[in-house]
Image (cartoon, rainbow, N blue to C red; front, top):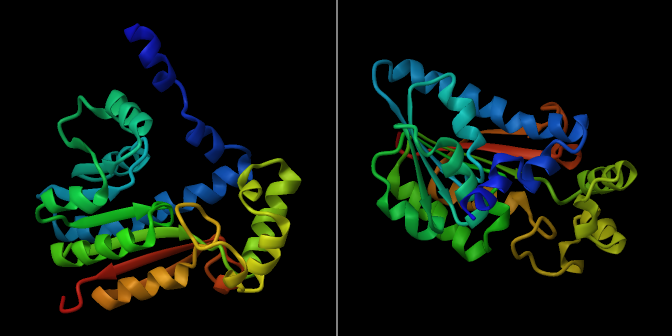
Length: 247
């Protein structure tokens, strides 16, 4: 029985398979990890000789831990609510002394975090109900990390047309979340024509999240992927970096 229980986590999860569906999908998903390395590097230089306390909300199978641990001296705490992701992450990394995982909602787990240097939420906050996102951001601001770093998909404006049509043409699955009518209206910024956002991509407005963060922290940088010079209307992902207001 134990062997059968562990077999799925020896292999890729469906989430991981989806992220490397083809070379383009894999390339697009890789930007968040490269950006995470770049924002952590200056803090690591400043904190030379001391472990960096890194927290990740919605860590899934803890790929970010693998990316950062190879480059920095970190103490990592992942927060994840999905049982399969928790099982997978603990199987892969649970024996490492600088890895800890909390199987709990971020709305409660963050209350046990002390003195974090950086808090990450990569492709996570769009999957959390908006009232909970507000509470999470408020808690992060109270914890006063040096940086709060998050990435979210852009699901409003012409970018939605590009993503969903591209998904359809390549046989990927993301467009199935939308009807074509919903894709049309989202591309025209008419989210009032879509059902209210819940925990899926559909109906999510990254600009709302940016405003929530601005109320509690100072947004110091917004990057857009895959090409930073593109306006958000034609970008696929928004990557936001914030710090305490009175830093």
